[in-house]
Image (cartoon, rainbow, N blue to C red):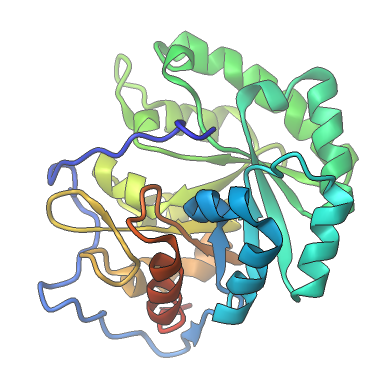
Length: 283
């Protein structure tokens, strides 16, 4: 998991994605918008802090003002101990990121058990390794795994979710795997967590998917980029999140996690992204 994401340093691929001007000012908001009062953070962002001092890191997350956290690793701690840390700091974890091998067989049942202890609602596939995304047939095989995972999550009162990168939009003979997964798997079986950074790298418009698949996106990653394609702290880049979140109700968005895969300073990333993130508005 530590090396599961590679940053694409390219200004290409912005396509129809909504951008901010060079001044960095957010776009005007439509009437009826509201602020994000449950802003969260994907804890991959502060993985070094978490590994060194989980208790202190979670306390700092809460002190900054975050309300929700999304896990990807419990660092060998028992889930009951981790849940106690969240309770102590007034934090809630709606989701856990897992790898492909964690959504099959007994591994999935273990994740379901952990999710119940953590009072999570979503088990979210974080990514597919390069060896698992070489053909459309591979994606179709994954869809069969996702079908079973979604069925088991449903039985347990949870939901199975897929988190995107840019590679799901690579065209295989006129078919994009992201579109294929959305069409082949019903909303009841698999929901989506949209990562706005990777959507921009792929040159895709979030609104297009929000409108075509309403209610399918309960979570999102608010992750910013500059004109060169580098990840930056939320609000320091060119992505206009207010414009993107103008259709949050249509999308079904309930949880908003800031994230940065490669922060130069994990504490500063948390502080800056929270300060700018709480200014965002959504429908």
